[in-house]
Image (cartoon, rainbow, N blue to C red; front, top):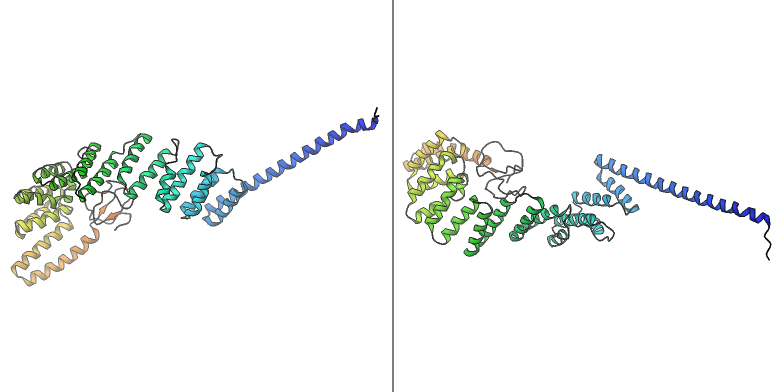
Length: 403
């Protein structure tokens, strides 16, 4: 039988105690190191934020990247970095950050949807539309479903894929619980216009019908319906449809006035068509409609009749464009009367007026202030539909770019 010294029995509790104290000391050291690391990361984070606030983005990005490398669990920081890269135009770096997140298997479904959405935005910004569509379609039905669908809708409009845009808009209505009928009507109008261009009248009719179902009495759909009837050689019915535009949307009549006169001329009723357009000038004399009426009246009734009409317009709706057209008409009369002094005088006045009206007359977007010489259904600046006023402005330039 082995004999154990009493001193060893007394030493065992002491050894256990020393072992326990050593483990506790190691734990405290580890906690202190973790605390120091946490404080260091916090300081680095605050330093990065401070650099951003002081408009030093390059140094801020370097600091935040180091934090993300030290702690791969900082999901929100990765998202912030990716978005910062995208805003700076560094789409390749943004794609790498968001792609890394999207490929991680340990992410929660919400974070995975967020990564797929941000990655889709990166691809969209880079012009990689196919990859953007694939990534955005991976987003589930959570918080990022509606933003992803909005991005898809934006992309389909860039691609002019109006059929997919219609589907996306309808799905977005269900997600947001708000109507997108105006956009849907415009998408159908785009399809109708393309069909009319390639002379596919059946397809054009279907698209116009659906546009009018989305927004009854829609101005653009009615204009296209008239074009469709003209293509079928039914000018009388086209005039009836366009008459609804004249009654409900008179400000848009300048978009179809020439075709209106062509339809009446085909029926040998040009005077009747001109008279109806003249009646609209009482409220619509400040835009292109006046130019069109003056042109047709000069051709049909002569410059004397056009002069009388313009003088009347100057009495009830004075404008620089009306004054310019009046000077233009009087120049024609002076040339007919062979009056050199009068011609020289009117030419000088007309030159100044045209210079002034050409620089000021613009269509202006009510959403972003983008100004343009021609009318657009969709603003080239902000891509909003029906944001342009159908009336040209002649005042000082509003804020926003122009073309």
